[in-house]
Amino acid sequence: MTTNKTYAGIPESYAKLDTAKIVLIPVPYDGTSTWQKGADKGPGAFLEASENMELYDIETDTEVYKKGIYLAESVTENSSPEAMVEAVHKTAKHYINKNKFVTLFGGEHSISIGSIRAFNECFNSLTVLHIDAHADLRKEYEGSSCNHACAVYEASQTSNLVQVGIRSMDIAETRVMNAEKVFFAHNMATNEYWMDNVIDLLTNNVFITFDLDALDPSIMPGTGTPEPGGLLWYETLEFLKIVFEEKNVVGFDIVELCPEKNNKRSEFLAAKLYYKMLSYKFLETQEDENVDDFKVTPPFSKISKFKDTDDYE
Image (cartoon, rainbow, N blue to C red; front, side, top):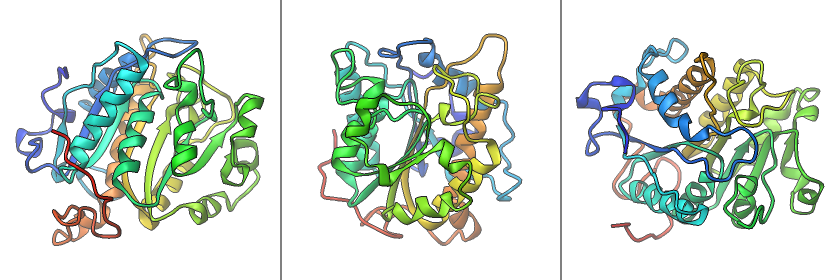
């Protein structure tokens, strides 16, 4: 259950499901992490930080919360990794089928198996843009295919997976990885065209799974497995803005926030990142209020339509 009344304390008039364009699903799960625990506290810390964030975005000159952001009930299933993944899958698909722009906040990265599965079932020719320090391409780990180390293995088999920021992996993952669609951090550091190169590999419909350990620990220390050599703030925003401008981002999740004791910097960054991504997504429609990204038939008709799906009841 979510304890926050509305996302970021926005007025109730902007937080109703029937009128909100955006849905935020918290998933406080930390069942398979293997080093620092605490990702289950991530969604709560993120929501608290969001309440202390200014809701006017200077860069885009917008207040995206006025598009409506519905804070859904948290997905709290934790009886097994497989049960959690299925609960996330069903919940995400439920709101996608209501023609909402669906976002999720974890929790550890295993939640993305469920969210990616839902979006892949609903959108044609989906690219999963995986922004992360780790490859997460194990087929199975510690007896489960629903482990955080397996977060995008299924996506590698069922969608167009493009990976950005990778700088830690097991040698076995090289046998699964499509190296032509992987942007390793050490190469990105010397390639001024890496952003354009990524864009060239994306299909029209894009789902973003953003693991916060993609960011350098100098700005994002609050994650379970911080890795040196990560992305910095403004290059991350530059890249995301290009993706949102040039492609039809159909949804995203943010995962692996592991709050630090006595320091709020990581959750505040996560809060700003989430809000920036929404601001980029809805920038065009905020500039032209006559444009609506969410049509009943077909949804997201600005670019592409859904695959045929049955509503989740």
